[in-house]
Length: 252
Image 1 (tube, rainbow, N blue to C red):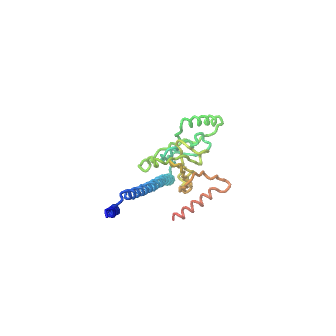
Image 2 (tube, rainbow, N blue to C red):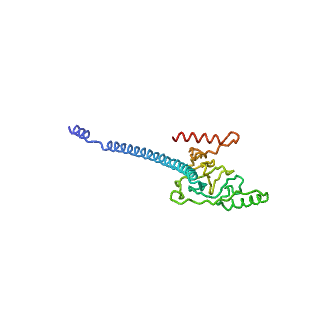
Image 3 (tube, rainbow, N blue to C red):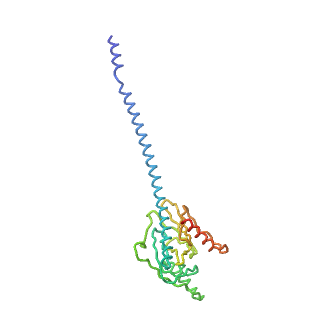
């Protein structure tokens, strides 16, 4: 009888070891869930941060396109030669204009149509070219004095800190500018020069802003592009006029 009673008491007593094992298993599952959630949150944060950076780059390209259009409209409405100044290698840009006669000449020693504002190295190169021109009795294009128009709308502007203007192609320059002040010019007749502006984000993505010179509108491309080669024998002016007419029809 005593043995039987002892066995019954053993059966009725809960086994603490089994409960602890179950408790340990449940805690392990919780840890796995926490780790999984943390991984998902980290992935989402990384993807979201990348999207923000791409958004900054896209927004920067839109700002440059708007500035090019504003420069075109300013030249058209005021009758003043206008240029958009961009500090290549930074995120800064602004608009300038002039009443002076201004001619863009690809053979100009300054490669700016006589406009002021060069680095010491460029000035030295310009001096040597100027000496060559003098010896060859070649006339120089006039030096125009540009200044920023009055008003808050013409103040210096900046893109997001993680966006940089890395390269500028213009019609009046033989090679792309990769540092220093670069200029895109517009004239009172409602025409600008062909230009491509490349912007880069901190992750290395590049966006390009391609200016249409006869309309002042720009195309934004999500890669690095260079200006298309111009074939003067193909009636380039008519092609540009047709493009402007198409843009006007779309705007209507």
